[in-house]
Image (cartoon, rainbow, N blue to C red; front, side):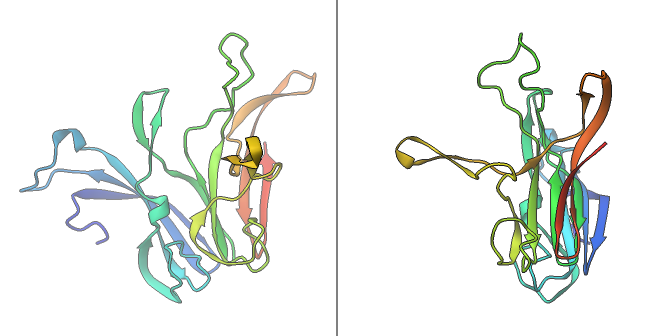
Length: 220
């Protein structure tokens, strides 16, 4: 019923639950309907949406509202209908959720965006402007115990970024003017070599939300 008369055919892809909330992601494919004037080039286009239900008084629904109880699914607009350009395929692709960790009152979503972790590994192709970027992570919900990690205690009803864990969030330009702002990202799964042993392993960073606490760690 969420997609009735929208011209979209939904398929539930993922379900996440924790605390007093449930979340699920949907791939909605554009289809032809009788009497519609949709362009043929739009047919088959996939839009990825995120929905939630449950308790929202602390902002855990992520829909920008402070609803006590949400009995029917509500869309997280911040995590829906997202697209990006993939240079490797020269196409526009939907940005899906790779995973979503739900704590007792807060949550964190790891985005399945395009990543690049090969900067500085090839003398033949690297340039001085080449840089690494990882998977985006957004946080929302209860924050009484600073569990979101943004340095404040106010609850968040809309998913938002936090600063990197190992550096300042703002790089100052000339004259003290703000030049650029960084955000927290995690390293996607990739292969690394351990010391001088020559052993190769696959490693990735992960995010978990618990009872008033958050954790970021590397897993092999």
